[in-house]
Amino acid sequence: MDYFNYRDGELYAENVAVSDIASQFGSPAYVYSRAALERHYRAYDDALKDHPHLVCYAVKANSNLAVLNVLARLGAGFDIVSAGELERVLRAGGDASRVVFSGVGKQEWEMKRALEAGVRCFNVESDTELDRLNKVAGELGVKAPVSLRVNPDVDAGTHPYISTGLKENKFGIDINEAPGIYARAASLPNLDVQGVDCHIGSQLTTVAPFLDALDRVLELIDTLAAKGITIRHLDMGGGLGVTYNDEQPPKPSEYVGALIERMGDRKLELVLEPGRSIAANAGILITRVEFLKCTEHRNFAIIDAAMNDLIRPALYSAWQAIVPVKPRQDTEEKTWDLVGPVCETGDFLGKDRALRLQAGDLLAVRSAGAYGFVMASNYNTRNRPPELMVDGNQVHVVRRRETLDDQLAPESCLPE
Ligand code: LLP
Image (cartoon, rainbow, N blue to C red; front, side, top):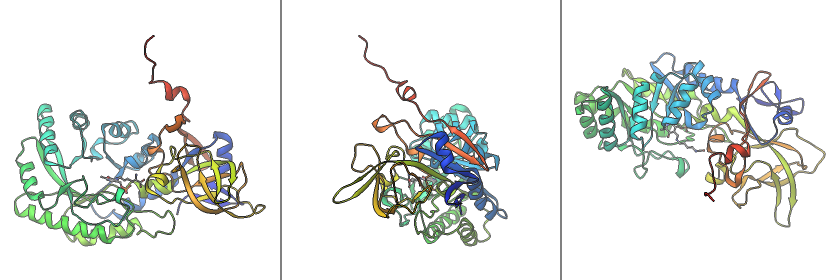
């Protein structure tokens, strides 16, 4: 369930009419629901309440300060992949001791910053990264807490670009090589081995691949215990899918229940890194129809949002629901391609959508709260849209619309 529903014939975001938001703030615009974010976070936290746990929201999914702040107020942890994301978490009131630092290419300065801030754990993805972290921690005179991100070689059955747990991916350490690398990590003076981490992919719609990965990781944990290396936490990453169309992913409670059952009576803290399942259905992208252009072959609705605002359809052939803000009956239904103003054939947000449309109509692209604004660009020198957060009957601007001056400020011409 989310908080974008029809009432009196028009779409609402919590208690605010989406058409009113568009009149006040223009389009395109991202709109998030505070209640939805809170509900999605709590679904994990409540399901885990009887088990030691840390829910680390994956900041990359939607890193707006207000989004992070809403979650920080609930006591969330955060999964970051850069020093920039760490800074966002800290400025949003997040607690560094609840932050895990993932990513294959951490630079020395990022490690240093994270150690100074006191992050909970580094998810290390290679043996060379171990050496780098050991060196940086030594220079600071501290011990760096580490997990190794292992690659359990399971097929997550998702889009190849967002599947990360197969041997051929750049991510993680081959699980078969992990015992040797753990032994090295344990022997390095400035590292403190704490956990095992894995993340097998994103938008998974069944529990089975997670359980396959878990079985392999638990086997590794037992092997390590036999070698005298005690693992205290198990980080299963993110990846739980959401309903974009007719997918029926397990609920967080079903997913978490299955993990805990499979972990048996092992005394392991469970860390999760959900991103999409918290943010995606807590957001929409509002867009307006500029022109209708019917050709012999196709009907195009040219809208004011484009691939630079929401790249998922162009990049992954992702399908996201596109619905009228005020459904009308006075126009015949046609099949439309919803395309933006960017000069690329791949610039579409939806194809073959049956809609009753007239120029000027407002539409909402659903499930746009995750991997939406964060992946937006200025391609075609378009200002990125504002981000608005609805809280009950109030709308807050949590990022104003970009201006041309914002865009051009860092640039300059050559001297005369
Ligand atoms: N942890 C790690 C180490 C990750 O790499 C990711 C996502 C997550 C957690 C969060 O996964 P989630 O719960 O959101 O599935 N841009 C793509 C998705 C890329 C996901 C990358 N990693 C999309 O729009 O579908």
